[in-house]
Length: 125
Image 1 (spheres, one colour):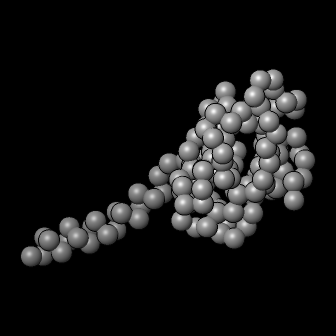
Image 2: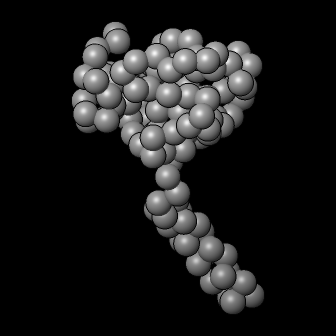
Image 3: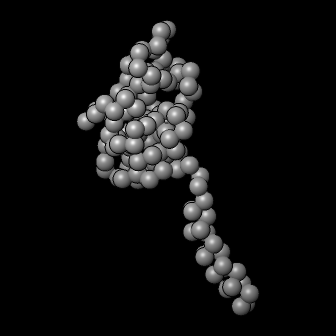
């Protein structure tokens, strides 16, 4: 009986530590809005919102209850000039609700490290 209680106590102690492992999920502030901009070729269909991950990929979802999915570099771009083909400008805001798992989310900082700005330092608020 004591062994069972000890094992239960150990598992309750170790479980929260598993959250400390770096799984690529970032910190978000619920209720805040984070801007994004770039170019999208429409490959995945309409998107609801998204964000640029710290790994350079665009993460999108197709509705507010959907999970964020990593888009391919060949479908989402954010370099200075619009690519050819089917690419169209995209911009919007993502507003995390606290339930969303956001892989590689950097807290809304662009590549320049400043909140609310894209990689060119442009403010989109």
